[in-house]
Length: 115
Image (cartoon, rainbow, N blue to C red; front, side, top):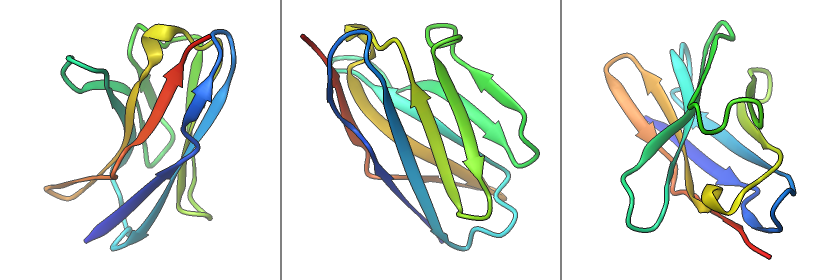
């Protein structure tokens, strides 16, 4: 089993920045990939960014150039640096991890971008 706990969400003004963290614990050996997803009110959950164990990244077009995903393997922590935030970024952000055939999710952290 893998446990994921997100933190860092909150209220920020448009143009501001936030950094989300996801602490992983449990059976984290050889986690294949990790990522961030988000779900806005009335919308389906969508991929934000992913990162593989060897550092390859992938981003949704809507966040390219503004968000940066990274992982600190020594700390077993995933990060999402979010810059130039827009109201459209408002959503619950979920941490995701894949290990073998299993997919794990955190509980989510709310990000609200509003003036």
